Amino acid sequence: MSKLWGGRFTKETNKLVEEFTASISFDQKLAIEDIEGSLAHVQMLGACNIIPLEDAETIKEGLLSIKEQVEKGEIEFSIEHEDIHMNIEKLLIDNIGPVGGKLHTGRSRNDQVATDMHLYLKNKTKEIIQLVQDVQHSILTQAKVNIDTLIPGYTHLQRAQPVSFAHHLMAYFWMFERDKERLQDSLKRVNWLPLGAGALAGTTFPIDRAKVAKQLGFETIYPNSMDAVSDRDFIVEFLSIGALIMTHISRLSEELVIWSSQEFQFIELDDSFCTGSSIMPQKKNPDVPELLRAKTGRTYGNLIGLLTVLKGLPLAYNKDMQEDKEGMFDTVETLEGSLQLLAPMIETMTVKKEIMRKALNQDFSNATDIADYLVTKGLPFRDAHEVIGKIVLYSIQNGKYLLDLSLDEYQQFSALFESDIYVILSPEHVVSARNSYGGTSPFQVKEQIKLAEETLFIKSK
Image (cartoon, rainbow, N blue to C red; front, side):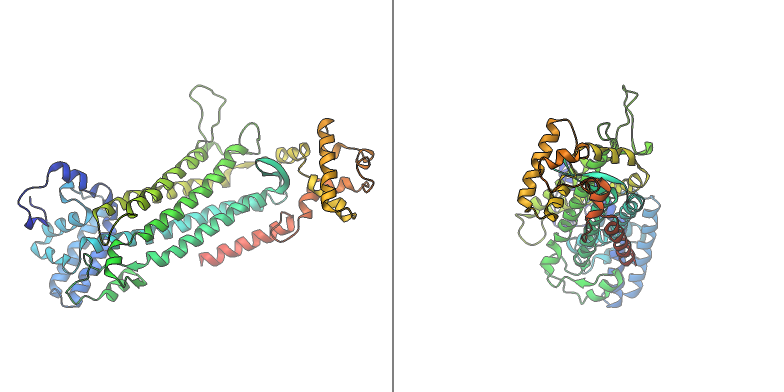
């Protein structure tokens, strides 16, 4: 059977070319969006008297019938018809006759596919925003019950200073909050309507783009037809945000893997998020966070892939742009799957508070507080820093920690030391003393959680 565009051609398309250039295997995901765009378009054509109203109504009913079949999974798309647009149009003509061919009046596949992807990303972005918020809720759930749970804080993966475990978790809350804000802001660019731009130069028909925009819920109409059909910035932006979300997921996953190891034992992941070994029966492997960590690379590849496709393209539409969809679909699916797993995994993990607290008795993470102590006694910080360095070296050489040293030993290094040094060095005091805004003291962490709850409430309204 000849192609819908085949009037100019004298030969059938080479089968290898047909298979190589067809996109229906993946762009069928846009079927509903394609039909929604077509419904708005044909109703506008009728309202503007570009086609008879009865024809517009016939086409509308035909499209609604196809939409119902798509939703029920009753339609099998054909590679012979190349893409989702030609497949839908062929189904329409088969169902209602030649009048279905009037649907494509005043538009091109170029502005049609761009519209489909804007609609798709608008819906998916809103869904992903909710999934990110679900992760934030799970973080808050754990943070609320772990304000007084103490854990070593690290820099360079070396123990630095003790912190509230809630404070540590809340760092990820704010990462995801920025991710959510980026997604929300990106909707301003996604919410531009390309339909009506035609192939690249507009159309000779008296179309009403504002009417279509209103029906499809778009806030802005592309003012330049060439930009409308060639713009993929909105997809690049989504892929960039998606890659950053996965970066944050990967960082948290890395900590979950480390914390659940035998060497740390700070947490235990619920059995439902772990797997065993085929040969070692004692193993409980954190496969989910490991895979979350690995899948981050997919989203990076999708971003770089599209940037590479676009970097040398002249205006306006080029077939290269067919490569914009699979990476977009893959990033959407990767984000959805990752976020849906991350939220319950965080919420159900067991926090081993005693092991975390015990770890603080076997390090020098309270050393900075001795320096601060000496500063309050009048010693310049740089001199205090040197004194503490010598005390730590002495402790290491003698197999002791700072709380193990006697007052006489402290006074060998400075006469400013008094018995209150042991209060200063307790992990609870070290944490409570950091009461500056954004610090790890229980008061500040409670205030932070309160702010987070208010932020979620406001953003979800």
